[in-house]
Length: 248
Image 1 (cartoon, rainbow, N blue to C red):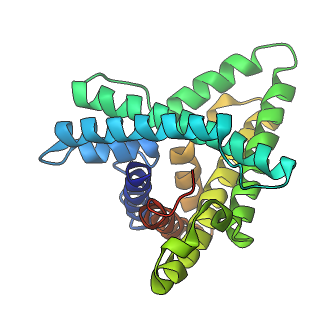
Image 2 (image 1 turned 60 degrees about the vertical axis):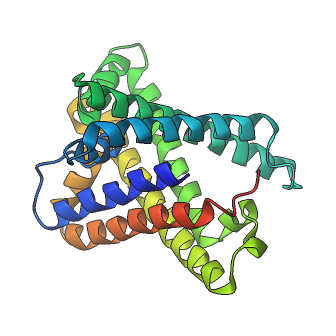
């Protein structure tokens, strides 16, 4: 959980660089890992990060299989288990990226990978429909993640009683900011994928890096990016605070 939070804190810093006009680094999870690789103790830190993220992924898979017994409604329990699977996949992907950077293995950027994937799907029969379905899924995911922050349902996964009163207040505030900001970032990615589906142009697709840079070029884009950067920072801080109190 702490390693997962660290990635989001680094992602907030990279997003802030876009706000300030510095576009030298990739603004996605792999960009965050690359930023860590540039520090004095980069390789050692990357191996620690990778091990932590793999442990996080195993924990999330265990939660998906047998966790969330405290959630009484079946629909909500299934939703949380699906979320755990998604976080396990994310943690594994970022962990692999950390190892690749630690060993010097080069990879395509997230945007290049997204565009390659989109081009292959668009070339299939009904490719635009398939890409459009993915866009709707990502848009829905963004809404659900943000909704978790608005309704504070993330508190259901925490033993809030284990935290001091002052800490509980900050966990609540940081959780709301973090989940809403992260949901907004996912929603932006869904919009880009939707444009690629409508126009049958894979170059319009992309990951978080392209989504945030595209937003930066829009009117009031810098303000929106600042909000998202605060959201990532809040989510990272929330992960640190929630590491002790998380159920399961």
